[in-house]
Length: 309
Image (cartoon, rainbow, N blue to C red; front, side, top):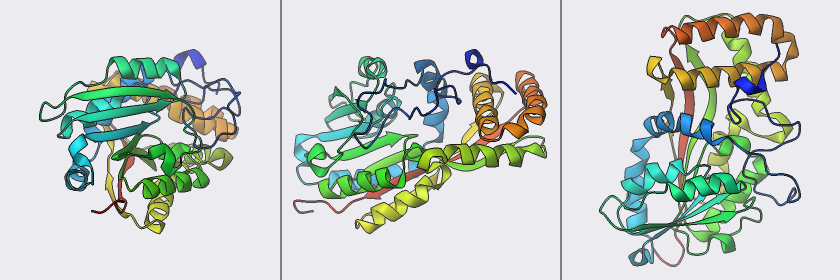
């Protein structure tokens, strides 16, 4: 099966050139490469599903930790890694009290522009929210880079990192003594209405595609739990599934094309059967008969504060 790149929004499927990496990296090994781009259309399409899926149960322990951070009187400094169009800030900033300054990190200046323009302006209690942007690969992410950080956030990031990169992230957060809220990492499990024998094969091939080049894919949350725990953090994990029905048909269509396309890219022998499978699933989606649960996990790592608790 040929995946028509024009039918798959960049970011929803394997439409990047061979060897391209995701938007954010934690090592400085490709500064001269053209920055890959997630299409803002894809990020905007998934934003409502992301917002509905994120684990609200992790907010109370996060709020308690932030309320007790040293230096909190000066407001919160929040680093959003791989911010894309800024959906994490739009979701989280209005749910936290107090003045906040968000530092948005991304490789793509186009996405940074979207994020800055659409950033929230007020916290839950009406306090001011300000924003700045930093373009780069988040290379050399050390405690020095996070000096003064109150919180590190990211969305859909862990699964596109290597074990080394996650270790770097955990070490930096531990060194800075700041918590990390890392949401919507793929869990490797998908459920579709009217189960098909090919569901499991597509899912397994997709998961292998996510692990290409040393990336962790669905193994990322486990690796992150271990890395943060090794640095003395208390780690909490909560499910955050997408639950897609007729109201999310446009997102479901793009997700399906990307999911099946990645599986076929990983296992070309699936192509003949996958073509018929995708056509049937897309028809069910268009008819409003398809429901999909795409499992993700949210992770909250509470590092030991520095400078006294």
